[in-house]
Amino acid sequence: MDRQSFIDRFGSVFEHSPFIAERAFDAGFIEEPLTAGSVYDGLAAIFRTASEAERLGVLRAHPDLAGKLAIAGDLTEESRKEQAGAGLDRLTPQEHARFTALNAAYTGKFGFPFIIAVKGLNKDDILAAFESRIENAPEAEFSTACQQVEKIARLRLDAMLPGDPDPA
Picture 1 (cartoon, rainbow, N blue to C red):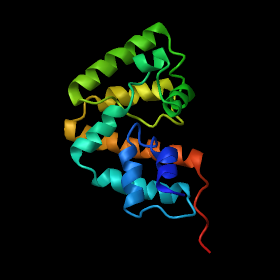
Picture 2: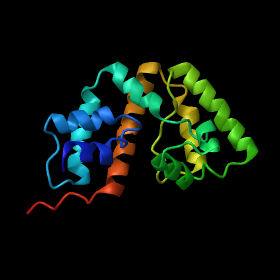
Picture 3: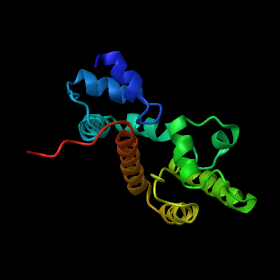
Picture 4: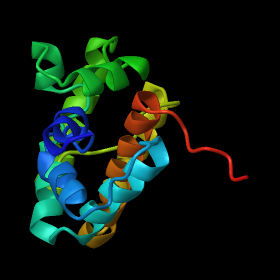
C-alpha cells in the first residue's frame, strides 16, 4: 500500500490525528500484509513517542460523550457508531444533563474530554467510570486517557483489518 492510501485509510484511527499514520509509515513501521496487530503496533509506537503536547492534541480531538457534536450529528462515523453501541444516543433528558455536567467538570479540570473505549459498556458503566476518574490527579488521568485512546485505536483496527496470523 502506498503512503497516501495508508494515510487515507488509517489516518483517523487516532481521532483526527493523521500525523500518527504519516509518521508510522515514514518510519517503516508498516509492512504488508497489514493486520490489526501490526498496524496497531506501528501507530501506537508513534503515539507513545509523540510529545506530550501532541498527545494532548489527540486527546482534545475526541468528542465529548453524548455531547453537542453527537446531538448535531457531527461525530466521525467511528465515534457515532461507538457511542450508539453504548446507548449514548438514547439518553433520557436527566441522563443527558448528567453527562453534560460531567463533561464540563472533567474538561474544566483536565483540559481534554473524558475518553473511554465504550465497546462492551453501557451508559451506567460509562457514568460510573466518569464519576470515578474525575477524582484522579491530572497526571494519572492523562495516562489513563492515553491508554483509552490506544484501546479505541485497537478496536477500530480490529474492525478494519484481519487479525494476526497464528504462529506456525
